[in-house]
Image 1: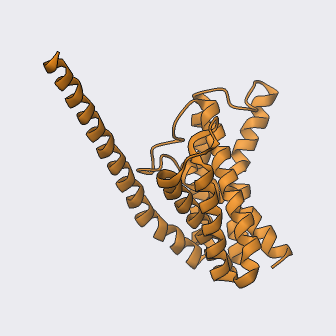
Image 2: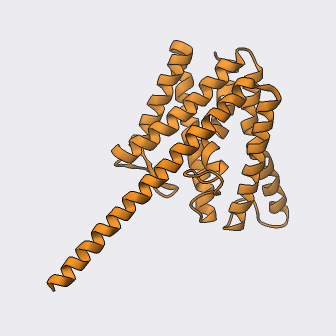
Length: 236
């Protein structure tokens, strides 16, 4: 019995060590992707024009392929043949370029560089704050059926971080902008989680280490970009 108990204890310790090592490796991969991919996106936004348009087109093409991948792994809404398949295919084809294309429109408009950079910064601040606050402070689940890892505490931290960044960029007017864009970013993330839940997969792809697919990385920006564009056009 003593040897059996020691063996179970040792196995438990080994399992905890393995989980810790996996978590650290995933976090390192996530950080690597952000450190490498982040500057490339910022560079595309800074240069604008065809560089930004080409970057968004590439993201849209890969994202469309990932949506088809999700469809192949489960029951996706709107893909029931024959009419539904055509409508679902069209919606999937337009979903990313139409929404994410607002970032290009934002960059091409008045004060485009500053507005586009602040929008991206708000989305990233929301994502990062929600991730770390949820990881270390999260207690209450935000949407357990869609994404068990997301918490209310993480969402609140994400919104606060988004507002802070927006205020730094736009002053007092940034409060409304940060609130709307941060909430849109969280909803975009949850929507992509819903798609993955319907497809019964964890990630939309494997192209980005630590993040999964392009949809996993840009899901927040896909919905936040049009909200930022129209809010700035109408109110700021």
